[in-house]
Image (cartoon, helix red, strand yellow):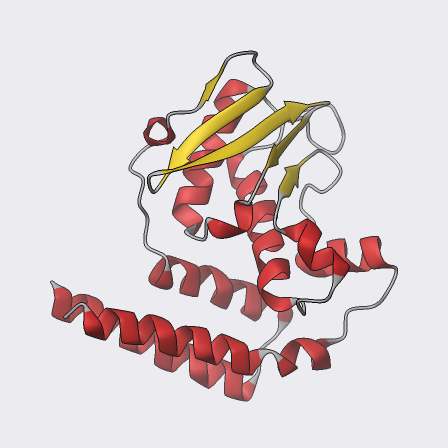
Length: 197
């Protein structure tokens, strides 16, 4: 089993490096981020109940993920999850969103229907991308560490949210400057997998 995991991980790393070196479209980059998320951050949850979502007042919540408590608030049709950037597994993000949705629904942008756990998870992942890619001195990076799952940001990509909040066009050249940092993260993860063998 470990050999199969190592083989899969190695293929993912090689694929990621080739895409980073040759470049890809915005949609391709999103697919790559999701794929690498599944491969580099395996799921720790099997169901929404695994997070033990709890509250004393119906507005302030705690849930447990990987033996650590996280704080979330529901207010004015919005879920806010603090330190959400630390949860990286796409499958686990979806399961957490399912638990939150079962507790309080978030209206869709048109306020005629409700957001789905899948589209809330997409928004969370966009915040994670922002947190990982923006320079440490960027003020929006600090805001991206906590995700607000609200009606207005439904379906928006990292690019949409960044340009709307900063008033600046996204500079792909600056983002590509960070590809060295991405490569280093992949190397660290590969080293961890090899050391576990």
